[in-house]
Structures are given as C-alpha cells and as structure tokens.
Amino acid sequence: VQLQASGGGSVQAGGSLTLSCTASGNPFPMNTMAWYRQEPGKQREMVARAPSSGNTYYAESAKGRFTISRDNAKNTVLLQMTSLRPEDTAVYYCYLFDSRLSRDFWGQGTLVTVSS
Image (cartoon, rainbow, N blue to C red):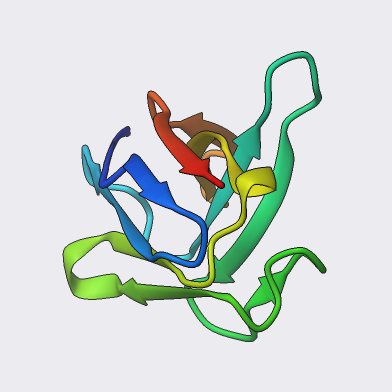
C-alpha cells in the first residue's frame, strides 16, 4: 500500500487549505485513514481519524476547524482545514491502518506553513 499526499502550502492565519491523500496498492477496504502532523522537535500527533465505517475523531486542536472525509471508492481521504493558525504549521502525514495486514502505512508528508 502506498499513500500519496498533496495539498500542503503556505497560507496566512485565518486561511484555509485542503489536504488530499490517495491510497494505492489495493488496500483492504476495512481500514482506518487519518492525518497526523509533526512540528520540528516534537512528536507526531494525530489530527483526525476516519475509519471506513463509524465515527470520525478529532484532536481538540482540530475540532470545529478541520473536517476529515473519505471517498472509500477512491481510497481517498481529505482534510479540510479552516481558520488556520500559526501553531498549525507542521508536516502533515497521511496514515492508513490495514486491519487485514494489521499494519500501518504512512505517506511522505506535506508541509503546511501558516504565517501570522
């Protein structure tokens, strides 16, 4: 399974960005896709998670501002980010947990920079 993320970039505080990630390589349909982020010198943290069925989950910092959505037919997950803040600046990683293989997969990361 390979994950290809896109959509990062630079934006001013208060702006919006949408990240996209597509999984290829025939991932098992029953999976969880998520977005994580990592700031320099800090641990990677989950931003939002979306199972193939069931409820989504958001980190407190993302609630009310970010929306995760999936297109299961296309194996794609989006992260719509609004009201961006400088503290949202990080490398964002797409993640997939394949429950059949019981394995994690990571995308290459896409940089989001929010300036004040």
